[in-house]
Image (cartoon, rainbow, N blue to C red; front, side, top):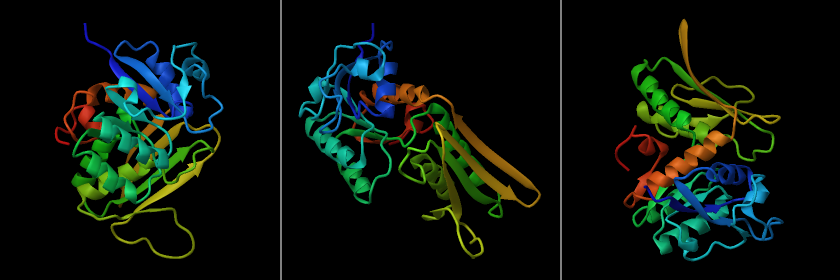
Length: 270
């Protein structure tokens, strides 16, 4: 029998955190050992399962990440950018791998991840859906195969409470396309006013409305034809299941930086 991976969840009371608690309860491959919220959380001291609406799981929500991560083999972070940097430090010191699903990071993030990845396994996934991981690969193939005359544009939509735009997934899709074409940081968000489209740029339009879970479409538009790659999320549980799958996989990996493509075998190097 395979031993369940011991998981510390950071951001346990947010939208994604509670979805992960619900997904972990019936999953024999994982065992939640700590549920961490932010300082001052109204859920502190409550059972994480009751906060998530799935019934008691025997883990109380705490406000501080334990230095030893409560004996976890891997951490999952869906908190806030500032808390993610703290979590990286704690995980690095404790030699515990971490799955980072938080988005909206500042310039310091990449440097900190690179430093941590020299000592622990770090998986950065702005979207933990397995479908999105495949979409990223499809976008890379299309951008590489289609002539440069095909313009690339991205439209993404999320619920009205999402604070960052463009979404981390939209940026990852843009990076996948730009990388395949040998472009630099060509993506930009939205357009307004006057000005012609520049060759090689990748535009991103963001929609925030209602309770949209997540929608991303990449347009490849040429003369007389269009190709689109679309991913529609209708249930937040897909991200939770993907995050748990990633955590179980990452717990056994050597130090390095990884993505969901590694988890699915679409990419073999860190």
